[in-house]
Image (cartoon, rainbow, N blue to C red):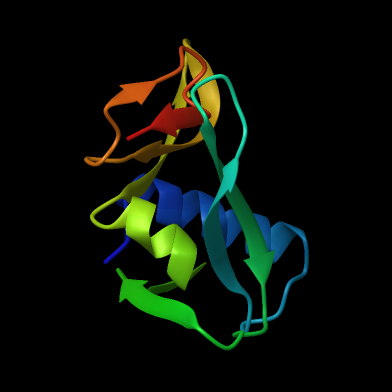
Length: 108
């Protein structure tokens, strides 16, 4: 399961509204090779479920990932910070053994 914090959900809803996306759009989360720790997170908006996708719903928000990325994301929460130390989405991943200082990549 992938989760979303209330703060991230509110921010996603604002972006969807601001960008004029349809109610069919959802958050797609994936993991790609790269970054200083070996694996990087990717987040985008999509409106098409692909074969093999894993679909979750948390707090009324649909979150989708591909099967390969799901292996790295089990139990992860998408969060959002607008504090002084940085602004943006970030991932709380209980599976990550190491993360880089920017928080955009990790390793297991």
